[in-house]
Image (cartoon, rainbow, N blue to C red; front, side):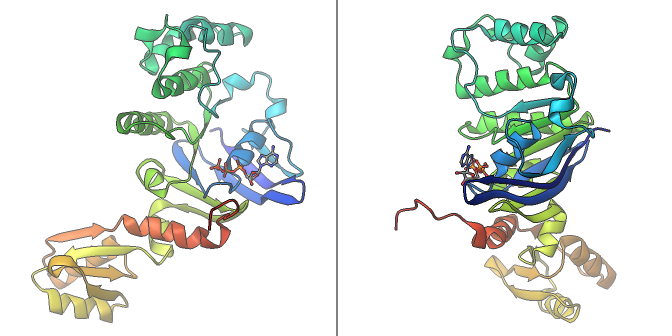
Length: 304
Ligand SMILES: Nc1ncnc2c1ncn2[C@@H]1O[C@H](COP(=O)(O)OP(=O)(O)OP(=O)(O)O)[C@@H](O)[C@H]1O
């Protein structure tokens, strides 16, 4: 199983250390979200993994080898870094064919990736006239040409409409289901919560968290669970006795922190208490992220 290994990765631009001793692993078969506020160093890290920027210290390897040591990189790793990198006057098919031929890949791959990304109908059209969503699909088609086991996407949903975002999310998940390692960056926790299995959170180039989404909700401490039960008073006391913090929620709900929904559900079952609702609060993930990155936000250039 091919993975990405980042070890002590460090990058300086002038006096700024924009990636600071970063270590993490991107596992096969899952979507790893790479999350951090603007300027956190996500793109720089991805560029170092892809051999587009040289680390000052540390290393980034794909399947144990540095990008520069991969004999045919396209067959090992595919990347989508920025939309619109395609020559506008070129037809989508020709663009992909040129890439395939120059990398020694069979022509049939062009048809296969066009079908996979739903672009067959526009294969003969010039990429210059494509919408952002179509350009992103073309970029993904190019990334998939060599059937790589590792994929890297830098903010792929930026600027997409809701349908495009949904397509992208489903596509990432399907790539992971096939056993590929998918690294996906975003500055939006809400996007990650719906797409990623695992999260690497960075701020000012440093690792802030390396965790699953469910762990983050728990460990972050900000994770709350909303519940409703006919046995409100009794269960609130029971939860408090079990170490949770309970407060009043909207419309007679209880909002619990310090326990996961699973733990609350088990406690209720044990005590024979009926729960009519048990909902982990998604907003709390956002809160956890804000809390985590607050000290690392870059306010430079922000109007007072
Ligand atoms: N080639 C460069 N020369 C000088 N500084 C750079 C260069 N590339 C990036 N930086 C700086 O490094 C820092 C990290 O940038 P980077 O683009 O990696 O962050 P990011 O997390 O991807 O943010 P965003 O979400 O805004 O793209 C920023 O302060 C940026 O200005």
